[in-house]
Amino acid sequence: MATGRTHRPATRSRGIPEATVARLPLYLRALTALSERSVPTVSSEELAAAAGVNSAKLRKDFSYLGSYGTRGVGYDVEYLVYQISRELGLTQDWPVVIVGIGNLGAALANYGGFASRGFRVAALIDADPTMAGKPVAGIPVQHADDLEKIIQDNGVSIGVIATPAGAAQAVCDRLVAAGVTSILNFAPTVLSVPEGVDVRKVDLSIELQILAFHEQRKAGEEAASDGGVPTAAARSDSTDQGPDGDMPAVMPA
Ligand SMILES: NC(=O)c1ccc[n+]([C@@H]2O[C@H](COP(=O)([O-])OP(=O)(O)OC[C@H]3O[C@@H](n4cnc5c(N)ncnc54)[C@H](O)[C@@H]3O)[C@@H](O)[C@H]2O)c1
Image (tube, rainbow, N blue to C red; front, side, top):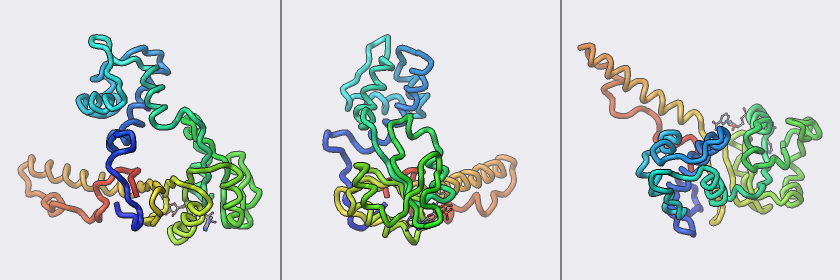
């Protein structure tokens, strides 16, 4: 997805392809579940099934980490958790700010899964003066006027934008100027960022559109197998999903 000024290489500096990087969190989630059940080793097939990935692709991905497993034994779960966490930069704590503490921002602030994965919500920021000082998830909301100081005081490099779309670019610009170099954008707008800043975009409505597409395909196939005439929807090769229709829920902006 184009971001105006952003240029993103297909591989990371250490030679791990972006597509592999995008799958590492899937492996980590599956491995963490195994670790919680005290499972010591796992085969590539089992892990691939748990992560929803093809096993040949998994083995290729792990070869970039220098992890080949042991024939007949599989991969050491704890060691892979450590290796992938290290590769993803999760062996350190990442302070995160959330900007826009409305319905979504408050839900994100209350989500316990960030902290357990090494992302500490360091500050909540909103432009509404009536919210200043009010706690959300136990953290007092701070006014947007102080955004730069908050970023610098907390050494924040990751910002989450949950403002209305119309405010998102200006918020993004201020975050970047204050030193933020990674942005997770929930606002339905394409952000323009300078070289060196990473933006990931989350859009659940796009996921629903993709599901709607598959639903109408299924309905058409059922109608055809019943000997009926396929519906107009089933006959159409594409739906009105727009250019991002095949993108994942979290995607490079
Ligand atoms: N990506 C997704 O899947 C998804 C899902 C739901 C909502 N959204 C988007 O998330 C955003 C927030 O949705 P919501 O329902 O929480 O809206 P909301 O109106 O409840 O909250 C928006 C908050 O942003 C604050 N705000 C506005 N301008 C600001 C600024 N310049 N700086 C700081 N704060 C500012 C407002 O005061 C408000 O508290 C919207 O853009 C919405 O479209 C995305």
